[in-house]
Length: 344
Image 1 (cartoon, rainbow, N blue to C red):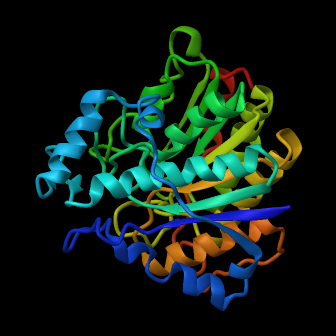
Image 2 (tube, helix red, strand yellow; image 1 turned 180 degrees about the vertical axis):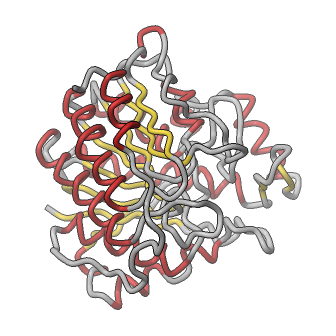
């Protein structure tokens, strides 16, 4: 079976000098074509998400707010730096709808897996709030679509963006049908400031949130230990019908907005672990959905390496190399989290 590609670059959703702009995806398709993988992907034309799809994860007030700011000419949607242009509401719906189209392909068996290169990103958008450059939560909308339309009983979401997926966590915090796992930098004054290890869900969702708060400069070996020793056993115990990945490439050591320590080779290993997990647990059903990543060479090559993993090609592109400094050890953190989540 083929691997799907949803491409929704949102050219008209951009603001001068803002790190989250249309420039992020401008060179991705030529890069994939240069390395001979674009032909291995089946394109999916994104469709606009319906209001019904959006209201499974967002309030009517939030949707109306984004629409009104956008249709009135654009502006800032929050007190930070989350913006809208006159076209942003339409394009955000297209991004979310494109992810649902990809879920349709994967859940019906028309494709084995896929990647959604869409923007605006989504994992900071909550039920009734926008933040962190995110308007609508593409991954959350896709998860609920899989459940409501395709009968998926359990959906696992793994978020490896360098920032905590606070919006996704909020939406599913009380829910035992969605497992949310986030590996993220957690440091003083680092956005969004939540994602502590003791945030594990509540009510019916108790135990269905796994946060891995990392110090700066955890590199390839630390991340890969976390995936193998903690994330993969947690997801395996959950037995998902579908695996969604909030794929942020901003944990790379050269990204300008954070102090992560991953290399492109480390990212490639993580992608391969996740694809193999989907193969083992849910018939290969996995969809990577783009979140952050603001160093454009890293973003292009990171996406290429993820596509290599999806189509089963044993290749990795990394012209940058590993982080130059010694990486922080995660042994103690792993021990604490294994104990908390009964994974010893």
